[in-house]
Image 1 (tube, rainbow, N blue to C red):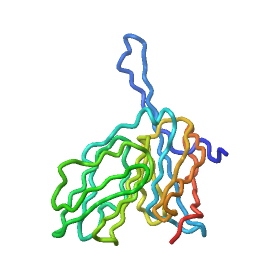
Image 2: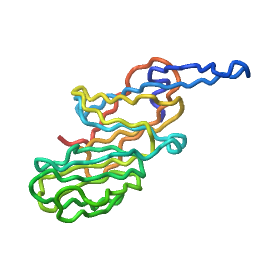
Image 3: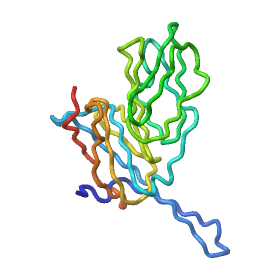
Length: 211
């Protein structure tokens, strides 16, 4: 069901650089705000929101310099969002060795006991949620969310809000994921049309999220 139409603040800029040919180019971009709540309607900080469509998939590009550091026996950041095709480095800045791995279907890999920076980054070439662990330190848990879109954001605000900037007008599937969802659970999905200025934030309730 398409629950939200014309959400976001649409900003348009007109380029008139080719006046001699009578040409003008219009580039429009919107800001979409999503407010994520738990099953009781309370704010759920730390959610990831992203917009999917065939057009967004064509625009997605890998990013350079992505990394998850091991420091103080933790993954930092503990949640990383990257477009598909991105290579992620896993530098170890602790004084002990780590053994980073994932058994997730989207990316199975293993970086055996090491210190410093591994010789090769890990290429995340399939979309999905990748759960990270350390074979030596069981308390270390992290996530890589691999998306097929340039429109994504990881919200950290206490009110559970997530802002997606510079979104092109069009029809999308809004997807929302949180680490409190059960392992293997699909991200929340709902139809969303970005077309007009104004509009209230999109409120998403993740009833399956566990505290």
